[in-house]
Image (cartoon, rainbow, N blue to C red; front, side):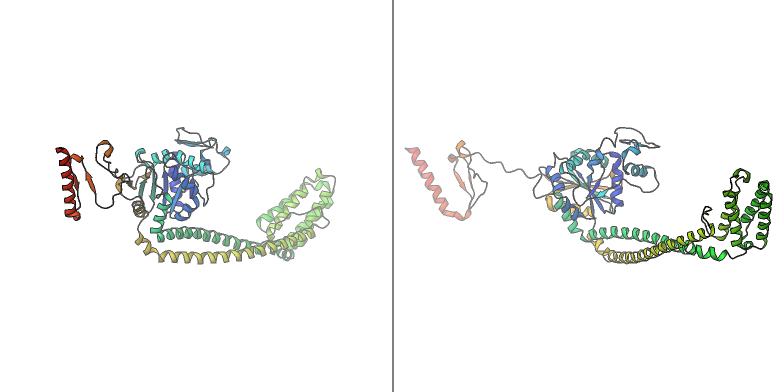
Length: 517
């Protein structure tokens, strides 16, 4: 059955929308307090699973969630319609503050009020009662007045059970017999409806399955595209990184000299000129070698020359004189890597930073190949699931198409509800109204049992000098109607004929003789 918060008036529109968006075809709302319909409440909890199974996806039986009555979540009777930071409130409800609530209920509620998306108060479907019977009875009872007020069902019409037909936009209120009858219950009523709407019930299940499969297919399509991108990324990135780096080390530096890399080399040359006083001869040789490499050197030669400069500066104790030259050299090395299409941090503390870089890229390649292989496997599995999901979706769509004509022949939930109610209750009278409030746009059909005929009044007994009666009310053979004996006894049975006539004369003769004496 469909468990959702219904103890607050402001939640009810969202609960009804949630049931529709959960793909139910209709909804059942119990408008009966425990004191009025104790048997009904016990049936709801005792036979929860049976009722859940027979209603299926056709009817959502609303079960107000007892948890949603907690006072630390709600503050009542606050009049506001604003949304400010972590406070969301409206008439009859306030969630203060959201961060203290501890679950996503408040966030979903705020989203349903202020978002353009069809976000809803969440409802859960339970095949077994999630709480103790008494808790559910209290929740149903407490929600009656609020639900009746929302649907604008008069108190004088209660107790009753309201059936909403989302497709036909018809609501049927079945007044509950008072006193309750052992041969009439919600389970039997729903079972009759489900029996008359077998194809409609199956279609409701298929429509739900169809939407679930469509969402699953959409998710798998997204997952497949994502995994395909991952596989391409591994193949174009780290897997080829080592191969690309080693191949391009042999290229002339000038082949990869773009504006950014050239600007970095020119900045390095200016920096060397600025710190030349630290070691004029060494700096002069460095600058000359850089100029030579820029004109005709290979990438490998340029990288090794830059690494040698950075390691020399890092090893000296006169760091201040070099004014962070090693940092500038690393920037040039990083720009060189970027021009080559690779990315890693140079390890200047190692014996051979270039060899360390190659080992790092080799490790990355192995790791990327392992990840690529995993992604390839996941991609294959996702494609298989997508294929299977699409096949199931086609099968569901096909079955739904095949039973469409049968669904139309069965009629609506509203019609089946009226038929089942009359079949089980017996004599009823029906009135049709235009729905209002929460039933705006609905046609409201009110079905109520006719009062049972009053039993025939028994005639006074002979002991009091009045007419004779048969105590058990059952008559066998001829019926005798007797007035006062002095007025005569009248037998109404044509078949007795003359024999009864003779008896009458004998009785009369005796009476006359007694009077004469």
